[in-house]
Every structure is written in structure tokens, then in C-alpha cells.
Image (tube, rainbow, N blue to C red):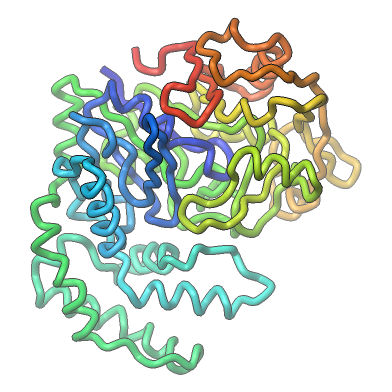
Length: 428
């Protein structure tokens, strides 16, 4: 049985939740290994639509154990709000496991995130303001608070005090805000301890034991390759490792245990927040894609920026993740277009680049070089076999497969859980 990593192959919002959910019925564990509640997955099951932010998509699959790995940053208030919301809708969340080594988002980091972003003015990154970046910064500066710290009040207070020694100076003297109270913060975090305790585990041991026992483990990325802190469009990125390598560091499972890496990409592209985006459409066509695709953030509600499929990005994502497969989503959104452009290269100051430019400045100046494909008008929502797609839709998919560096193993033709054409089995 394999260990499978599912990652976003663009700038996020590609439909990883749906892909993970579909695979979830065939896996024993689904692990979220990076990020926090700064991204969302929308999963449609029958007539029900679920918006997940912090919880792994496997939470919706009976019999599957969902795991929040050590690489995730956890807002405890959001965690329990999400659990309570699912419980109220009849979803069983009792199998959820949370790594004792995952870092907690304290309330002062949400404050710092928001005031820092405003302070940047025109140089804003486009953060969600949920404290994700400051919490990862604390982790690297070794002043972070981990889940396990909640179970020792003395240690917790010491860590809060140590973190606030510097942060309060920043809040008061730079941002003209009031200082954060140490005792109030500590007590607020301790209030979650007893409810959280039954969920906490050494998830590294649990997952490795599961693989030893022949169980199937699926690792689910938050965000996507182009938002990875190392490999994305820095500095307009998230604060964690959203590529396949992050699955290992964010879960404690070694790279030799990973059998398959599945990238998820839309049949066009979107991104949220600031940063370069060569194929972005700022016209009526961009709005058409936004409305037809429902391109509004699951977590923030912000309108997503929209553009044509970028094969340069897809090849790059394939390379840095070591993709074995691609899942192409939202092909149905393109129905009705006469011609569909695809970016096959970039023009940077008159020089053609078939691969991602190596420096930030060049990427900011990149202009798309398009190849155009004939569209289709037939409704494809009911297709369940590749041969049932219109000929032009088939040609489009095959062209993207050739350009993108990975085989396209599944094609999404609608929002429902079952609205997918499977070309190659992702778990075999």
C-alpha cells in the first residue's frame, strides 16, 4: 500500500480538497502537513458543501483517520469552531489526531500579522491576517508555543513571557498598540488544554507504524508549489513548505517511504494576494472565469485573480515536487469558449524562456507566449470516461499533459465528489 502526497501545482485553490476526499475512501490516514487556517478546501458530498480550513479533508470520510501534523500551525479557536460545525452536521470527528509538536497560533500573532501588513502599505504581501507568518517566524526563532506546552502551565507561561518580551516592545513602540497581557494570554490558551488532550499524539510514530502495517497514508498540502516559501514567487508566498518535500518534514515520515506525488492543477489558473502572475486576465474574460468557476476564497471570500493555464508553472511544479501524476480540475469551467489560450513560454525583455526564470526580477517582467486551442460547447458535467468528452476537450487535456511534465491521471468535470474522469489509478 502506498504513501501518497497531494500538492497544489499552481498558486493554490486548485481543488486539492476534492482530490484528497476522493482518494480518502481508499486510504486509512489523511495528513495535513503544512500551513494553517489561511487556506481552505471546498468539498461537495451529495447535496452538502463543506468548507474546510484547518482540518484535513479526510475528516469527511468514515473510517479514515485525519491527522494534523507537526508542520501545521494551529489556531485552537478555529480548530474547535470547525469541529463543532462538522459535529452539528452529523460528521464524526472523533478520530482526529493532532501532533504534540505542532505549533499554536497565539492571539498576539494574529494582531501582529494584521498591523504589520498595514504598516507595509504598498509593499503588502497579501497575507490573510490569521497569524500564520508570525507563528512560523516564532518557530524558526525558537520562541514558539507547541501543542504539548499546553499541558504544563508553568512552561507555557514562561514561553508566552519570552515571546512577548520582544513583541510587546514592537506593538507599543512601533505600532502604537497596547501591550499584550502575559497572564491573560496564558489562561486563554490553557482553557483549550483539556478538550485538546485526547486528540494529541506522537503522530510521527502513529504514521510510521501505519505504513509498517501496510496501511495507506495520504499527505495533503495546504497552499501550493508557487506559494512555497523556498520555491514559490518569493516574497509573495506562504510561510511554510507547500511542496512535496514538506510532507516529510511536516509529518516525520522519511522521503524513502513516499510512493507517489500527485499534483493538482486547474484547467486555467488563479491566485489570491499580491505577486507576479503572467497569465492574469484583467478583462471581461477574467471575470467570466471568476464567476463560472466560483473563484472566491474559501477562507477569506476574496475574489481570486484569474488567468489562462500556465504550462511553464506546471513544468516547474512537476520538477520541484517530483510529480508522478496530475489531477486536472474545473475543465467544465472552460465550456463555451471558442478559443482557449495556454501559456507555453515567457517573453522576458525579448528573450524566450521555456522554463521558469531563475530570478525574481525576470519573473516580474515575464510576458506569456500563448498557443491557442479550439474550445467546445457541449456540457461535459456528466462525462465519466475520457472518451465521453468532446474531441476538442480531449485534445486540450492531452496537450496540457504533453506540456506539463506529468501524466494527467484524473480530470474534474464538475464540483461534485463523483464528477471526475479517472484515466489512471492514483493508488495501486
